[in-house]
Length: 238
Image (tube, rainbow, N blue to C red; front, side):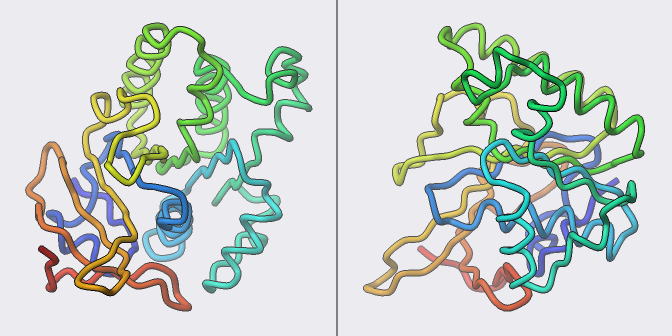
């Protein structure tokens, strides 16, 4: 079964959306619209398909996210006090649950993050999850091998709970992710970029990998409109 993204042009590049219960990596440099992609996925998921969602921000404040989303016609404030969409600033949650170690470092371990997610989806019935960004979690770990082990465990348990997840990660212009391991634990890799194409800077999207379904492997341009991201699934860029 496919989980429709709600992003115009995206589902046409796959066999209807993300395969249900998968881990999907959105990668790209700063300013490539990764967070906007995630906001649309969660917002449209409920507004158009009735699927409850959890957007977990590890870097941006909730106020910044709601302000940005309103400029694209997405009003997350309407969901306050409901279980339909949870837009959560984990920095505020850390203060409430008094994880002193995490407050000191400003970051959180995957185990603490997983505990919070599982409890929240149990209470709300969320079927979509967005974490922005997994790069922030990696800063908690001084040992990259430990981070790798914990990340594999984290993703395996999320799959067991049948939630369709997007993980956002930072990447350089060359395409390398922050820790070099995120792409190995994901079922799909989608790269957003902002690049010079024949003298014109254009935003692009490429699906490098997607398990369990067919996908278009070519680079496609996209625009940021008043309604958010719109992908041209017909035009390709070489």
